[in-house]
Length: 153
Length: 334
Image (cartoon, rainbow over all chains, first blue to last red; front, top):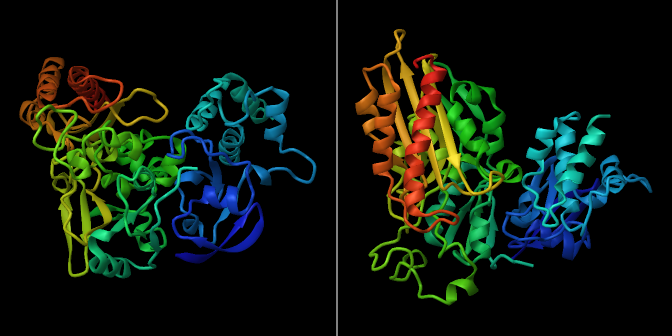
């Protein structure tokens, strides 16, 4: 059954008719063509589908699209301001904190949530904040370095 | 893309409306809290509800409030993250905030709710698998069949209970308020579980958990929850243990509860802790005796990844020993 739902994605307000069993991830990738958010395991274990709901990190693969009614969702596509990369994105590029890149959108969204709450996290806090995001290239050190470098100002 | 089975969705705005829907549709409905357990089970076709009843729009189910001198009330839809950051919980009921912080990952703590953790389904390596994986074997008890792949010739389901906040809540003598279409009642968290792997919850049809109540804190009390798992960042427990201890001014233990997690089909209390420690000043030898009893109470079977039953049994004693030491030390009793 389709139901109407209104929400804001990356500051753009929208109203959609959505099948009640669709996840937020399906709506982002298939209905809105926002394919920056990835599906990894699809079961809540890998963090590749992490988006921000009201500035808190959440797994879009385990969130029903109808559950985000009237909420604000941020995805990796919403981070750039004009042609400028977000400082976190820029830091990932500068530190080479990317190998295959599949985990990167989720990693960046988790880092974004952390820095929103705590602009100067300790290295330990950065590790904890991204511990729900798996990188199977195992390039964690450069990712942590990238987040740490901007948290130092 | 791993997709959910088709299901309808209702998100009532009040508890009474939710109870009416549940009373009317009963078993076709699954109640959706944070979705971190239920939606995984739906994707794996462990359950295929006709519709999902979301509690997320019911504001009366959220929040943490002190009722001075009576109890601390936690709404069932309060997120695990809120339990971690709320100082009234971390200061007075440390076992509960520690347990919440040990559930899954950061994302899952923001999404998951305390009511959902209380209702976490039991788990088994032969059950928490995709439909295709499961098709290669006979249907097990948990899926409605009549065989157990874990215990040879087993006559029942042995799936393991692993909700981390539950042993902490039992150790802290918490109660839950159950509401249905005709009545509401208070039940101890310890009475919420059947001990049956297939149907772990002792809820009546139509019951919803609306809130959790914790007795008022005392200064002479301390508690902790320890958990051992394969990967520190995410996994379900191989073993968990919650300990609560009360002390008198002269360092005598006046109350003690030890509750094990993930070693049976329900949370497992170790009553010998009370018998051995109450009325005495805790010593290392007494704590060791309780740890030995904890090991005897644990009945794990081979249904948890990354460990053997013998390992988990041994671990039950070791974690109990550590937790009791930590709490007694914190109270200045050792």
